[in-house]
Amino acid sequence: MSGVREQKKQQTRKAIIDAAVKLFAEKGFEQTSMDELARAAGVGKGTIYGYFKAKDEIFLAYCEAELEFAFAALDRKVDEEASLIEQLVACMMGQITFVTENREFGRIFAREMTFPGENTRLRSRDLDMRYLNKLGEVLGRAQLRGELPAESELLLLIAHLHALYILVLSTMYSGDVTSLENAKILCRSLVLQALHGPAAIAEAPVDVQTGWQQLRQQFLEQRKLEM
Amino acid sequence: MSGVREQKKQQTRKAIIDAAVKLFAEKGFEQTSMDELARAAGVGKGTIYGYFKAKDEIFLAYCEAELEFAFAALDRKVDEEASLIEQLVACMMGQITFVTENREFGRIFAREMTFPGENTRLRSRDLDMRYLNKLGEVLGRAQLRGELPAESELLLLIAHLHALYILVLSTMYSGDVTSLENAKILCRSLVLQALHGPAAIAEAPVDVQTGWQQLRQQFLEQRKLEM
DNA sequence: CGTAAATCTCGACCGCAGTCGACTTTAACG
DNA sequence: CGTTAAAGTCGACTGCGGTCGAGATTTACG
Image (cartoon, rainbow over all chains, first blue to last red; front, side, top):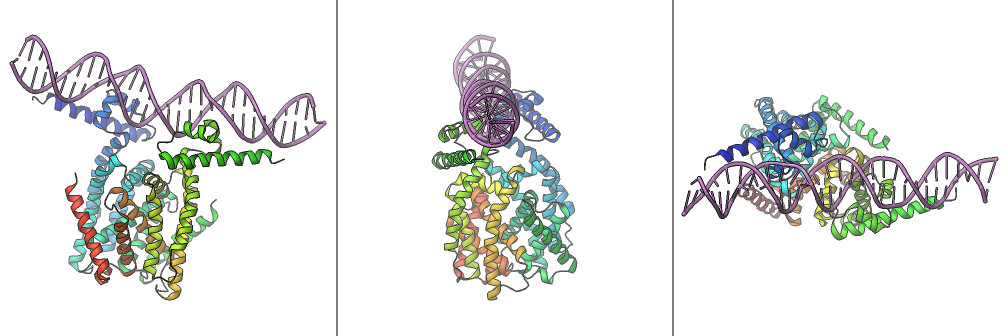
C-alpha cells in the first residue's frame, strides 16, 4: 500500500499533460501526433491510453488547466457594480476571447462542448456548468437589485444567454463576425433583445444602434457577395 | 467538346453519392470506410477525392439531398395561420426532428454547420441560409399581421432564434433533453421568452408553465445526480 | 523473503482517411 | 487518322489515432 505506484501514476499523468500543453501550444492540436506526444512525455504511446481514453480527452484536460486562468480573469473582469447587460456581455466576451485566442483550439473546444460525443459528455458538462453558474450568479444579483423581474425563470434565462454565447462563437467560425469588437457589438445587441424583447434595439442608446447597423450591413454584403 | 466526358463525370458523381447515401444509411457515417464506399460506387478510392475534398464533404452532399425533404416537410408543417410562436416552434422542431433521426448523422451535421472548418464554410453557409430565410419569412408575415412590433430588427431576431435552435440541439447531445417532446417544450419556453422578455413564462398558459417546470426539475436532478 | 496476482508499460500492429504518381481515356488539332 | 496534351482513374502507400498482448513492475500475502 506504499503509494509508490500512485505517486508514479501522478507523475506520468503530469508528464503527459505537460508535454501536451507544450506541444499543442507549439504546433497545434492536429499537428501533434500521439507518437510525438508519447516521446515528449517519455512514455510509450500505449501508456497514454491508460490515462486518457482519446486524444480529445487530453485536449480537454489541457483545457481545464487553461480554463482556470479564464475563469480567474472572468472574476476580475465582471464588475459587480456594472449594469446587468454589461456584466453579461463581459461574461460572454471573456469566454469568447479565451476560446478565440487559438482559433483551432477554440473550434475543437466549442464543438466538443456544444455537441459532445459519448466519451466527453460528462467532462464537457462539468466545464460548462462553471460558466452557467457564473451566469446564474450575475442574474441572481440583478434580480435582487430589482434589475430583473422577480418572476423571471433564471434557469431559462441562463439557457437563453448560453444560446446567445454559442451563436456568437458560431458566427466567429462561420466568418460572419471577424473581430472581437464586432463580436462584442453582437453580444450586446442580442443580450439587449433577450432582456427587453424584440423592440429593444429601437430603444437602445445610439451607439449600440449604429454599431448594430454596421454589423448588419457587413453581414448582408458578405452573404450576398461571397461565393 | 462532345459532352462524353462531362456525362461520365456526372454519372460517377451520382454513383458515389448514391453509394454513400446507401452505406451511410445502412451502417452510419463513421462505420463506412472510403475503401468500402469506393468499392460500392465501383470506382477507385483516389477517384472519390477528385469529386470531393474529404469524407465530410460527401456527407454534406448527402445532407443536401436529405435536406430537400426536410425543407419540403417544413413548408407543409408550418401553418401560416397559426400563431407566430407555434410557427417558430414548428420551424425549429422540423429541423431538430430531421437532425435527430440519425443521431450520429445529426451530430456531425450540427458540428459542421455551427463551427464549420475552412473547407466546409461556404457550403454550410448556403445550407443554413435556407433555414434563416424560412425564419425570416415567418417573422416578416408576423410583423405584417402586427404580431411583432414594427420596429423589431428582424435580422437580430433571426439570429436570436437561430441561437435557440442550436441550443436545443445542443441539449439533445449533452443529454439534458432526451425526447422530442421535451425538446418541444424547451423550444416553446425559449421562444416565448425571446418574444416576450424574461417574465414571459410567468404569464404563459398553464400547460407551458407546467411543462417547463417538469423539464427544469429533470435538468436539476440530472445535473446533481450524474457523475 | 518467495511467489502469485494485479497493475502498468510498451511498441508492433490494425484500420482508416487522404496522397501520389503511374497509367488510361478523351479532346484537340494538323 | 495519328499524335500530343489534358483530364480522369486507380490502388499502393503514408501517417495517423487507437488496440493488443507480451513482458516488466509493484503489491499482497503466506
